[in-house]
Image (cartoon, rainbow over all chains, first blue to last red; front, side, top):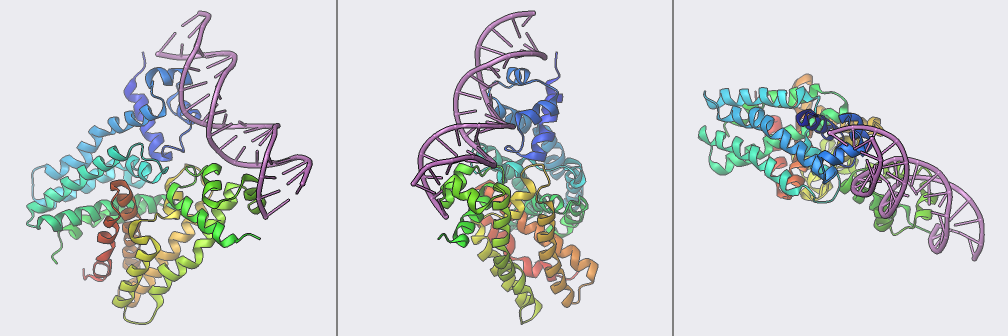
Length: 183
Length: 183
DNA sequence: GTCTATAACGGGATAGAC
DNA sequence: GTCTATCCCGTTATAGAC
């Protein structure tokens, strides 16, 4: 009996690294240790199902690392610092990519558009709500949150592009202060 | 006689939208209006050559929109504002993607790693040099520039992911002020 | 330079035995 | 649940006539 979670973990790793188009069934078979038939036994819908399984599998980690810290106890500033630690954990300090980002840029078709938008909105909304608690007006909080998420996504792009994961840490470390700065 | 520049333009459009893996030769043939044989006549190295042609073709636009404004006359603040206008032009206000970003995230292989890193470094360096002119210490200027480019790249990711190009404008508008803020 | 045709390969997906 | 074998298709790439 196979361990679905471990397979889904492998799928996450792979898709985060290669995106949708970059992950051929050969790579998937290698990464999971499963043969083609086994893959289609577990994921009857094919690659599409595998991506959706990866998205589902990441859900709890997203909640734990990217959402929950924003709601935790403590001051807003403390929560933002905890959130940055969650980011570092989720993205392995810039060494792991973002599945949402990879799917958003990869391939022109709209297969996962709804999931992508929902995931982005979830974290933007959570961050905006936290900023609103600090007395920032709703519209401004939303805008700041949007820009912060862009910064995170872009940090991953630049880190990958330069082959230097440290870019990620430098880009997110000052997020708490930047998000709360007076204007 | 064909107009290479127009073909290269079409390649830029396509690769910026779909990345490397997402652009099949069928799409490329459609986008350029050329048949397979003609494509291989003009780009003997195949898709690889086409991407390199697209990168080359974007060079002047990069210089004009993303580099030159930083060196132009005027105060640093004025130049940064001109740079943001260049960004809006180059990325069509968030409606066009970034070829560098698409190549950085798309596919696991390292085919264009050198070109990607060089392109990112060029714009980061130019921006850092401008910030240094404003009296910001070299290391800090470099860090700010890196984060700013991440913000631009991420804005494109989020804009695409949310299906809302306006994200881009909101993310880059405040860059001049944010880059020069005292710390 | 472009056309038609096709080779050569890898992709996703399935069948059926075990 | 997994294996071997295979199918079918789209893909990249080439050949050769025009």
